[in-house]
Length: 325
Length: 186
Image (cartoon, rainbow over all chains, first blue to last red):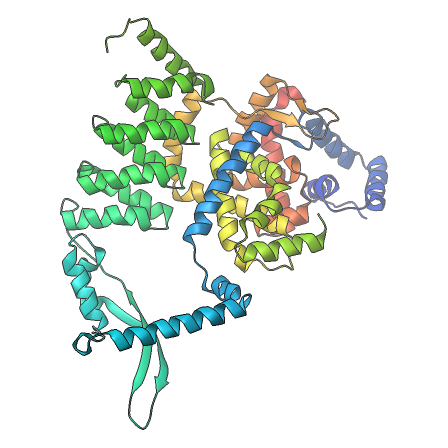
């Protein structure tokens, strides 16, 4: 080991000594160098003094209660995710593990199908519609469906697969997927647009998009579908930043009982104190029995000192009848 | 945990076994929460980062290759989640952090390697918390990983997806800023 000539390189060598993957022999060799090089020794002493006041391993304290809370919450989230997620690969491997049961179920399904064809009246046979007709009828059924806003030109066909082809007769069996991307221009006050955005708030996987959507919906926040979507986001979104924006948007609508229910739920259950504080502040003017019930619990249990103190203050004042309900 | 047992649990979790995933992270959860707490503005933010990161890890698990260490991979996800949340939602996080900072207490620091689990003197703990907030994201990551969690430079480089030299540069800057800020304590 040689002593580097520049101070910067010496400092990096000291970092190697402190945090590097050195074995005992390398460390001893470095310590030997310290006895002959004063500037290097000074650097090490300087760093060591810092380490004495802020020792290696000093870190935020994670108490058991906090660990347990996170473990519980993660279990809930994982269970929710595993219920909603469907993996074709897992499904196939599950089937492969039970060949007898699969064979029996397959045979039963085939028999049911044959029986169905035999008993069905001949003029009421299979009435296959083309996919675009199905889509159109779906779109006509519901104006608020995103499908209503997609035109035929927006579709792309991909993953086209010939499942079966009979060269003699020309009969063919195809499967394909449809993908679509649509661009809409209009005003956020247009119900078609704001309702589409309200649906997207509950479906879009990108947090930043959900946040942008909430911001754009501010002028029409009192619209039925919009505030329902915001309530959904407040009580279900995984991202605290998005929940926080949702709670701030709902503050203006806290005169609605439905919104107050959501605010109370957020105050009770949200793990983020920023969200809880906003929900708490929005509920302050409404000192009904349901809200007071939540505050009675919060004044003892909330991790936020502000919520605990303010809840206690309101509950005690109300109980002393010094607040006009 | 034995490597074989870990590999078996990973394979099982990759097929969607939630219990196997929970067992895998049980040994790392305290450390990962402390890492998240090292980056976050408040304890609640740290909990959120941890939850988001664990959900991201669960979803990304089918892509995990058994050649690398599970703990390194999952720490990388914690770090990336903390960074991407902060970048994407910067303005909202700032507003939220301001609300939380107004009402909330800071993280308490403890010397994990001392024989008794010493909670630091509250004044020093609060100063460390404030000083950490002055660091840039990468300085904070390097310091949290190497100084607080005891990762070697090589492992920290893997987690941060950069070279060891880059880790040294930011770690050096972080230590200098902290030394300056905590001058009266050393």
